[in-house]
Amino acid sequence: MTSVMVLYLKRVNGGYHYIAPGEKWSDDSRWAGYDEDDITLCTEDSSILSAVEGPDGYHGYNIRTTCCSMDGSSGTRPDCSSNSSAPGVTYAEAEQICDDNGYRLCTLGEIGSMEIYGCNYDWAYNWVSDFCGTTAQPTSVPTEAPTGNPTGNPTGNPTGNPTANPTANPTANPTTVPTRTPTEAPTEAPTTDPTEASESRCTTQSDHSDLESRLDSSFDALESRIDECCASSSQGIPVDFYSTSWTTQTLGAKDVVIAALSVINVVLIITMTIICCPQKRVLQKYEAVSISSD
Image (cartoon, rainbow, N blue to C red; front, side, top):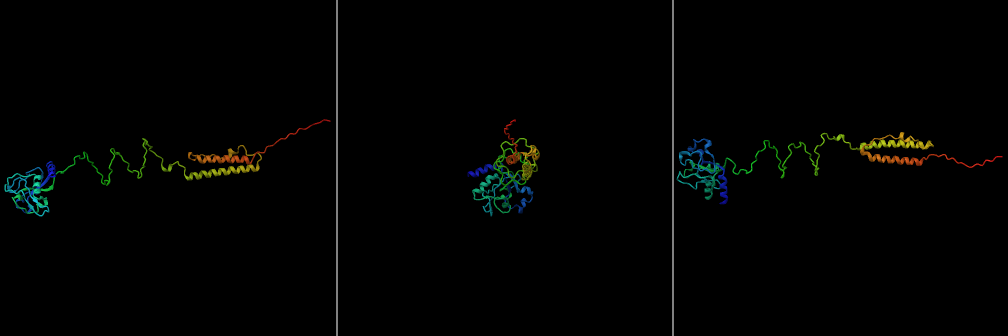
């Protein structure tokens, strides 16, 4: 009983259902003169009077009750009364009449296809269970301003915690593998002309190979000059040798390690040269001579 009363209160506050002739009206001459729009009327659940009067004035504007069996195979009128002036009933009252007698309200299709007898209710408007008009249970918090251009392919698994302030201009090509630990303080003014991949200053394997080739050539020339010096000169290595034999190389910041190793190699070669080719010193030996005079 409680659930029925709650349902009743909701329907009184704005529900709508159809009312229709109490039996198959297509074969009834009394309804033949009615416009199609006047055969079935969408009526507020709290009404007891129809907007259009029934034929021949049998029941006037009073709305009556016709019920159907649970399987929809037959119809009946439990509140049948010979008093045609009896007041009409609301949708909830009609529903309760049927329920109390083990029936239910007929659908619009059922009542329009059956031949049901009793109290001339077939010449009156009767409640049916088909809902019409406004929503029976509208949302309590409707959207204030729905989008004018909804997405044509919405996600099937939306996020449970969407951002409160989404970006107004999202990127057209977002990264497919975003970083798991983004920086907490990104730059506020990133460069508008970042270095392209082809302009990278990182040292490549080709750079290393070219540098090593040039250094090897320089070392070969240096060693050749040292060998020539040791073989043909008794004066050691000329003073200006190093200034004319070494070709200065311009090294980038990322080649410091290679340059440092090169310098060490030069130092070692010079040290070995000094050890292998010492300068020949001319030693003057003096001896005391005794001079006598005859």
